Amino acid sequence: MIDYGLMVLTRQVFGWPLFWAVALGGVVGAIVNFSLNRYWTFTSGSGTQGYSNAFLIQLAKFALTVAGSIVLKYLGTYLLEHHVGIDYKIGKLIADLFVSVLFNYPLQRFWVFHKTRP
Image (cartoon, helix red, strand yellow):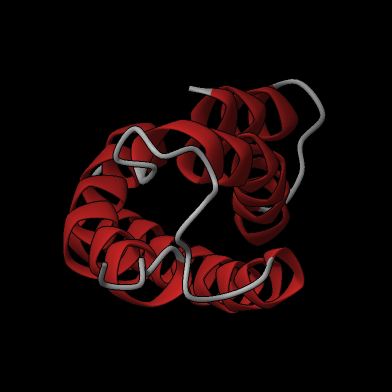
């Protein structure tokens, strides 16, 4: 919601180009996302114990994942808007769905927040 809301705000109100609007939303959303994923989503009830990587390694891996995600979401939104004729607000939701399920989740689950086996 943060990602999408910032994109629409910066594009509609401030007239930013699509790439920068998507990028800002992605970066701010990623900060919230990293915290939620590290301390809640991928903890399995053990808090931050048991991760196979230290905090800074996770942060670096997460930053690479976010950079790829922003590029893919921008490209998907741009292609849907300019080549299919779908409004960017709807196109972004479609791109987000595919990128989140096929790119973000697998990388975060199995690479960024990987747990060591007991």
